[in-house]
Image (cartoon, rainbow, N blue to C red; front, side, top):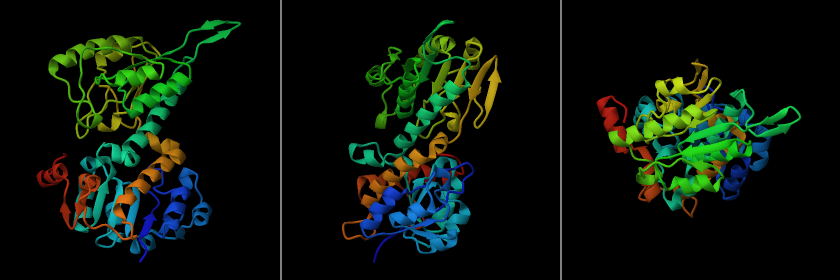
Length: 381
């Protein structure tokens, strides 16, 4: 019996992405799976129902009908409590669940006895690169952040030689040289900015320089597990703060991307440093959702302080929904290769390293220890 894979219309406010795109639908259908999408699910991402149908998907009119026959539900955002009630017991859900911010929803999925995999928990190992949704969506966020900085800045980014004189290029500073940061570096460089970047991981310096940007040096190596940075010691924070304050005060556009998994984002730009920034400078804080890298960031808002514009964007990948959905859908396709065996049947033994690490809930139990402990304590992991 063919596995039924479904993609609903996302209901979270402001979410424009869709979990499946026609290219991936076609591949799943050719592999013998039944694929269903909710009508209008791709509208905000620039994908029509007709395109889904042409690729081999069945377009279903209502969410209740879609979920009633689903074996695997592919989501972008975590399912709401009402969505979980429409799913059959034992349904497999795959998406960016963000358990630390959605403990009530994790509880609802547990009580409904769903099997849920959180893509943000996929380990950063070579075999899982094609499933790394955090990286694919960070690419979109870094790109968009650079464009927002260019749009809000009162300065040109590139150097211009005109009859009215020569205009010097804007100084763009990227704090954090992970996937989002490197994409911001590359985009700001393409726009003609004079780009500098900083990361506590020394290994990031080579990547920054390969993109034609200057890497700010500090005698600290904070390489952590899984390619992320570890938290700095108090002494290291003092050294970092002084260097960054000087660099930020000279920049026209600052983009911050630093994050620590499961922890509040580190503060890299204090209110005192904001007071030293140029009038007209712009700061885009990609860590706004996890507390912000700037002390004055307000998530989901744009604020103006001392002539500086500080932007705390939410869900930037949704603003490039077409290509963000395309990348995310391919991440899901790769993940499904582990969930469905060579005979086209659902895997029920989650011993694979990637499945085991990303398994959040199954059989009425929360399997991810930090989330389980947080639910028991009524706190965030």
